Image (cartoon, rainbow, N blue to C red; front, side):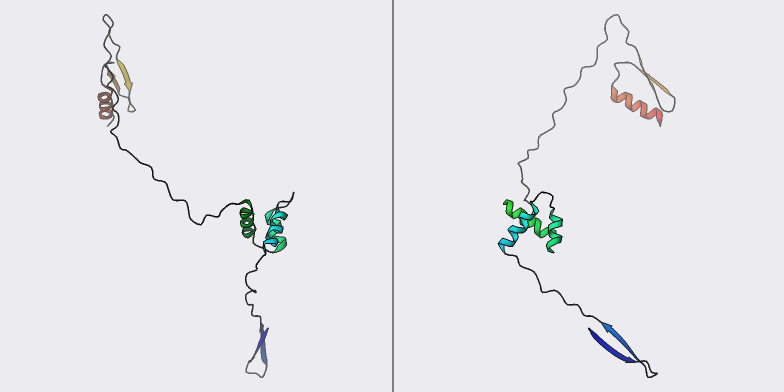
Length: 142
């Protein structure tokens, strides 16, 4: 604690008190036996890592690190390097061309009617190419 006195000019002295807080004594060090004792305590039925760490005034992450070490897990500081696999670029397989339906003798093919969004009707033969029908429909809707 420290105090300062300052005159207010009328003969009275105003006094202020303050407190300087310094850092703690530094990092605590734990022996191997203490670490084992705390890890075993977390493994008791009904215990949690958080409760044990609070009870003993240590950071939860530190206690979790000790548990991983007790299980034999090696901490990884770096992310694993990505594995590169050989890649081969090949031309896409073209789908075999579909044969156009051939009209059956004696039966007239029925036309296909497509009602467009604008109300127009597009009638085409069943043998008409689909891309051509799509182009016509786009042109009629424009």
